[in-house]
Length: 82
Image (cartoon, rainbow, N blue to C red; front, side, top):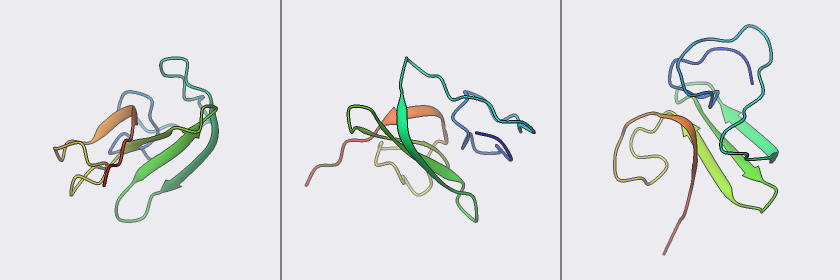
């Protein structure tokens, strides 16, 4: 991941912009697919090798259904029920 990182959308644990590609390595997760939206709500989602969905970045209004609106700086597993 690289680029603008104001909401933690790079998933690197901070909000520092990156000018060169930096590998997202968090808790030994291995992502097979990553997609990002950096327009008005900068967030990223990724699917790992176990087919689990993770999200990070902009979390308003509770985009990731975590019960809060705090931005997510590192990948968090998303579990949807209903």
